[in-house]
Each structure stands twice: as C-alpha cells, then as structure tokens.
Image 1 (tube, helix red, strand yellow):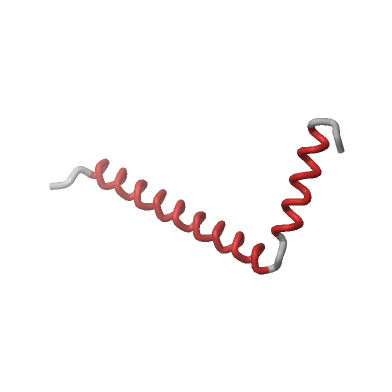
Image 2: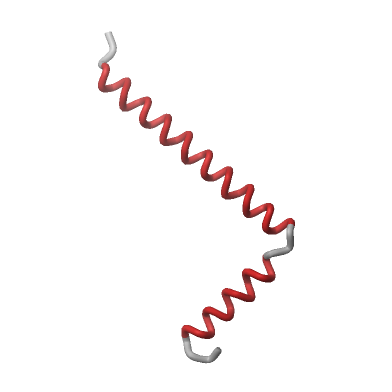
Length: 58
C-alpha cells in the first residue's frame, strides 16, 4: 500500500516540473517572436544606453 504523503509529494514534483517546462516554452516562444520582429537591435540599443548612463558617460 502506498503512502498518501508520498503520492502528494510526487504530484507536487510533477506539477512543478510541468509549470517550469510551460514557463520555459513560453519564454522561448516570446524570445523567438521578438527576434522574428527584429527587436534585438532595439533591446541592444537600450542596454547600451542604460549601461552608459550608469557609468556616467551617457
């Protein structure tokens, strides 16, 4: 006979793994969409500006 607590822990692990995989897939999908739309140059430009502002040049 299986322990109910062990079953609950296993369900929590698989649910957590499923959530992690779903979040990873959503993140990759959105990153791909941004690359497809050509937003990489915009993101790089903003990153450079923020970096230069932090060190006092921009």
